[in-house]
Amino acid sequence: MNNFPFDTLGLCTEEIDRFHDTYKALKAKYPIETTGTIDFHLEQFEIFNNYVDVNLRDSFTIKHQHNDSYLFFLETQSKNFEKGSVAGCMEYQTWALAYLKHDFGRVLIRRETLADKLIELVHPVELDFEEDKPFSDTFYVLTNDRTKATRAIDRNFRNAVMDVREDDFIIEIVEHTLVIGDRKPISPERAVFLAEFVTRVCNTCS
Image (cartoon, rainbow, N blue to C red; front, top):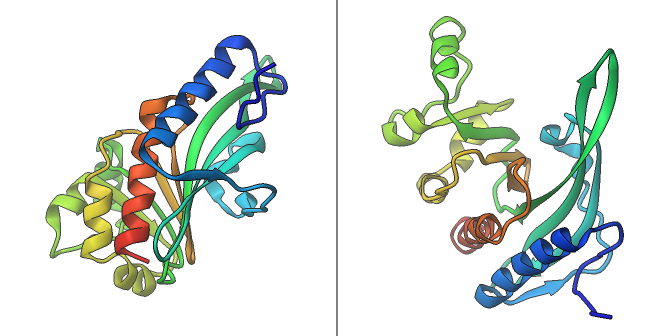
């Protein structure tokens, strides 16, 4: 029996292969280690509220000089409304986490859509950066504390976000803790993108 560096309970052969390919891709680029049992308090992030359940299957540390970042294999159960009842659809996803030096308040960052631009014309709620129009034209930023967010989302942080090549990612920050991911299935390419982002954030913004 193979000793995989992740939990294989409940996974089919195809899923185990996908987990293993993702782990190997991360291990080839970063000095990752299993973390053991850590409570990352994922319940504080609103982006996970749309799920019936979120289970942290595995977590890995990426070692940096001053501040570590983390990769997660999450088991999520989506809400699927059918015939008046809520049915759960199980999915496996990769998310990443970093601890930040500055207090951002609560911030949500994602790609800006046409609908966002239209809503903004009537109800301007987005945080824009006049000195960085390319960033503001590309990303939709919501915050509960404009002063904290404006100070914390500096040029280094904006540049790191601009360099993420995945279109559907979401960033949520609760004070000093950032998570980034999307709702797509686990894949090596996506996990490496996330690892690159939190590595850059930890090296330049922590």
